[in-house]
Length: 217
Image 1: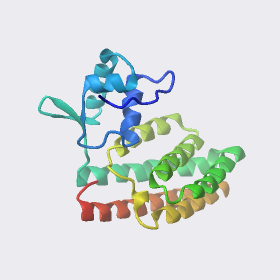
Image 2: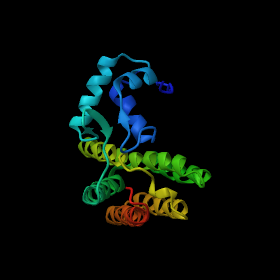
Image 3: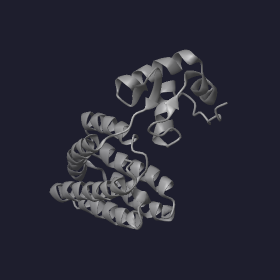
Image 4: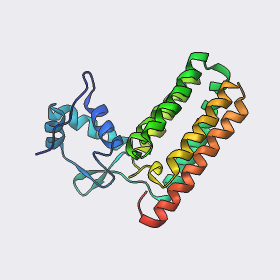
């Protein structure tokens, strides 16, 4: 029997499964079974079935015979994803430098400081990292860009482990976050975009090295 998961009110089956993949409860290659998911989340099988179909359409799930499994990214797909992410997030940082309110900048600074307490816990730091990047997306004040980045981050969930688990990467990532925030605070859009793209480029290099060692994205 599947272990029951605490379910937040008002979350639909699609969001619940997507969150479970994002949190690593279900990893690339894991088989998803309607009855087990319905039991875990305490919902009926019909919305689970509809959610699985939607996730398959979005290529987050794939077929293995008659079973649906969490998809994985090959080398080319991972490179393509990072290329798109660098451009879109660079644009988000540039727009944030132009449009972010002073309060939004302060929130970003506070996030960087608070996240230092998470060093040594890669999974918690990874969740905080997503919140930080999403806050930059929101600070761009461009709803269409935020929508596209949401799609990119859904695919990021298909990576089996976080690059923040690499030795010393957490400390360096937070220093890079601080540089991005200061560029946004200085209203220097080009510098903010460059700092964010460089941050993601470094993360990609770390991930490529891990894949070379483990064979898993």
